Length: 239
Image (cartoon, one colour):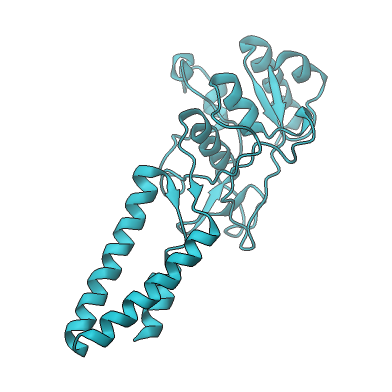
């Protein structure tokens, strides 16, 4: 591993393209003068380590707090809504199945990968697979669907969400709480009105409809709520 060689390659790429956005600490002098913008990579994680939120900034107290994903997206498109708007990441699929990854050495060798390969594309540079135990590297975080996802893939997802306005919006907690209460009364009423066998089938059908409807709401309207509470907790407890 030659850190000097990699630094030189990054400097050369920044100088040649003039369209590089860096993330992390403040870039070293040459990158600072050749890239177009930079931002922070630190984002808030949930209790299980998963990154579900899509923040535009570490705080709203100045432009120097913008995240790298927000900075990159703002250069390519007009991001809808302010940086303070609550956004949630909309993952496009399982880890390693959405974006095309190429080894760093291939990207530096024209014989392995032609320069035209990168034409008119967004290129994210980062560790895609970590060595050692699964999830041990700081470059990986848990994926909502299971397994671990590389940090660079999270950044790519965030940028595309912002560019294409595809982030998720959480339904407010009061509305969610109200629906959970209403659902509980509905299930109880069905069980009280119909015979046990028929009531069970009706409740199962209603629960399946609720599940499918919640997924459709997230897929087509980009809104989500904690449907697992009524589907996986509340309904089984009623039985």
